Amino acid sequence: MARIRTIKPEFWANEQVMDCSPMARLLFIGLWNFCDDGGNHPASSKTLKAEIFPGDDITSTDVQVLLDELESNRLIALYTAQDKAFWHVTGWNHQKIDKPTLKYPPFPDEKPAQARLELSESSPPEGKGKGRVREVKTLSGEPDAIEILNHLNEKTGRSYKPVEANIRLIVARLNESSIEECKAVIDVKVEEWLENATMSQYLRPETLFGATKFAQYVGQLGSSGGGSNPFV
Image 1 (cartoon, one colour):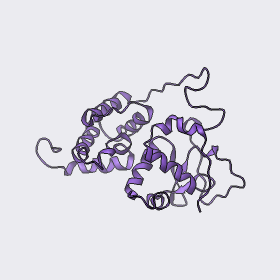
Image 2 (image 1 turned 180 degrees about the vertical axis):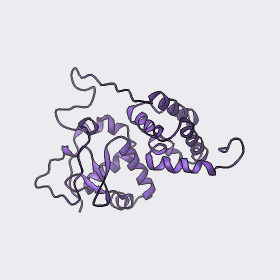
Image 3 (image 1 turned 135 degrees about the vertical axis):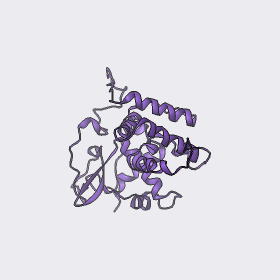
Image 4 (image 1 turned 180 degrees about the horizontal axis):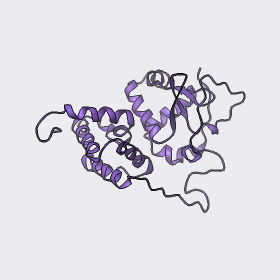
């Protein structure tokens, strides 16, 4: 059963939210309505499509891409309980609920506080508080991630910025793959999608380097043809 939830004004200026596409933001807000009172929801893109986009020309695969985007920006977290998978809204503490009802197993809250979306009255968006200094974080593998992001920009003619959400996502893929494979995935998907009005919007870091999708794309590389350059 859907529930009424609260959206604070600070939500719209939060950097984690601003790094998401408009459709991902809409899915995120819709997810709140269908979570239980602990901020948890079964990890089913088909269910979310039926709940949030019942009359829209959007597939469950499209919804999964948006979920990957939300996860890469640390707005939701995947966990398992009782042999089932669930999504947890990481900033759920801003919802004030009287007599909460927990329909699903609770999220094992083991993540550091800075990894959550905090929307409290005492925490204005970065850059808005007096004397606030933005923390600059350096990620291991960042130069390689920036090189890959630049490659994506060159191939697509776009200008994705080396913001933390993009870099962290690419660094995670570099922990399980190589620079060459990351670039190869970009090259193949640019060839497949760039001239397609529907698919070209997915030539972005959150789609290409989401954990599930990236593994699928790498698995497809060997079947792209023969010759000295199998991606042409």
